[in-house]
Amino acid sequence: MEDFLGAAITVLDAGARVLIVRNQTAFEKRYGVGFSDLIAGEFANGKNLANSGESIAIKGAGGVIREFRHDDMDPWPVAPDGFGPSLVLLTPNFNPDHALSENWAASTAPLGSPGNGDGGTTFSGDPNADMDNDGLSAFAEYAFGASDADPAAGRNLVAASIDGDGLFTVSFPRNSNATDARIGVEISGDLIDWTPAGAMLALDSVINNGDGTATVTYKSANPVAPGDRLFVRLRASSL
Image 1 (cartoon, helix red, strand yellow):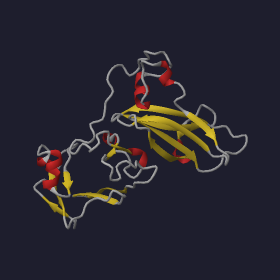
Image 2 (cartoon, rainbow, N blue to C red):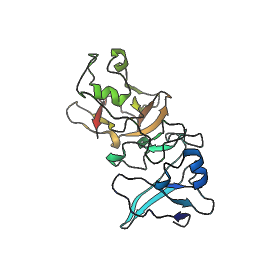
Image 3 (cartoon, one colour):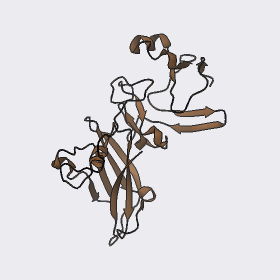
Image 4 (cartoon, rainbow, N blue to C red):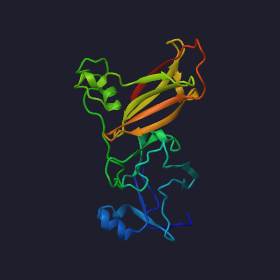
């Protein structure tokens, strides 16, 4: 990288992290020296990553590992746009598509969590339990950001409708802090054969609710034809 001054860190173990900072002295003043061993270098020529979004390429010995563009406009999280939180990749162990806004969230820590992601949460307990007898497993409620101790929390989690233009929308909450859960959207025309909704539905928005959850909305690209039958289900899976 022309705008990067490297240091001694050149090889990363699987799952390891490094930091590239704008000014190491200023970084250590804010976060302390506990992360100093992770600093791989500084941006050169006064450069830094733009809060407004830009293209990023991650390269290794074998070529480009990831190349994507992040943004600060909806449906991308807007809070990291210079307001303190970091832009954090969700479920990194699942190796999600970095170019999709739905795979990113604002960090729960106001100033981010350099060197260790965002911390986040992982599920504990019996994933198949249903303590509140509302028909949702404990893991599903965790993925949605609900509570298995409150039967009301599991009600009306999903909202589906057809707007005035005939476009189908489905919205649901997501636990923004979960690092081990993924919610997939599937569609069917007969309740027998189910397929991922990506061919018909596109991510429309991700709105931070300010309580550790985000409301995710998908919308169809084309109007639903009169008489068509369309069923949607959500699948919460662990990583």
